[in-house]
Image (tube, rainbow, N blue to C red; front, top):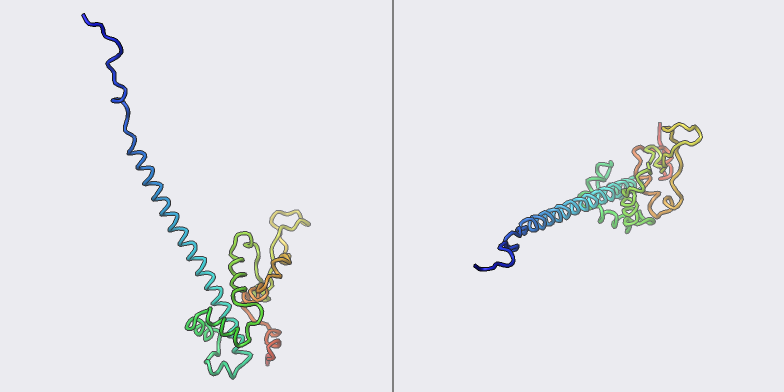
Length: 194
């Protein structure tokens, strides 16, 4: 009779193949990375689109202001209304319009890139509390009113001086206006006839 030592069980045969799970994890990781790249690209494109829209709005306002202050030059361009100025900016491009206005002396300080920089800055989350009065263009922030001790009472305070002193901030704030006031026309050498 033979004497047997050890065991007949071979442990390597019981080892499970988990390589499929590893490959599935790699595929999922690659899919998430691709999705992240697509979302990041879409966000960047959206921010660029907003910046271009702000620049276009700025150029339209400045071109219309130039047309109002120089009617003879504006007649040659055919700009009589804000809509005409918007069409002109769309045709030649906002960047080209700002450069043209800069060369004509309509944009001395700040430059178009400074206004665009302020517009991009205002999109950041830390500046989302800054609002602009639609009638005056004045920048303000609404903060809790600690004097009344009511949780929903707000009061207007001016924006911090560091923000208001940025080159192009005052012009950006004026571009947020939706209505003109008689003093604006007087500043351009015009008067309102009743």
